[in-house]
Length: 143
Image (cartoon, rainbow, N blue to C red; front, side):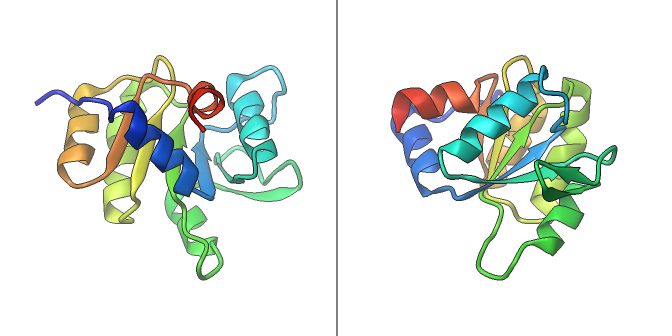
């Protein structure tokens, strides 16, 4: 089974209703795409949750070593709405497993992050999955 991205209306709706984005692979390096995208999405009003075992904080907020730790630390009533992935494709299947186990609603795989099998698995389980697109580009053009 091959994954298909949601249509433009569904992507716009996802970005409109989302409040919290967990960024898996977020970097403290200002030159990395993950840093720039996360900072810009935060400027748009999204709450950014950093997921990277190599750091303790990002931009003054706590960072988490795993997606499970990030979910557990969220305040009541502030769920993670989108998991935005800045990792190589070979890591996607394990991230999808975590998302499904944690019952997270949406997965966003950034440009160049492509794993059709894992994306199709997540989609078949009911997750909204956007693959090989930049969340910031989509936010700028759709909402």
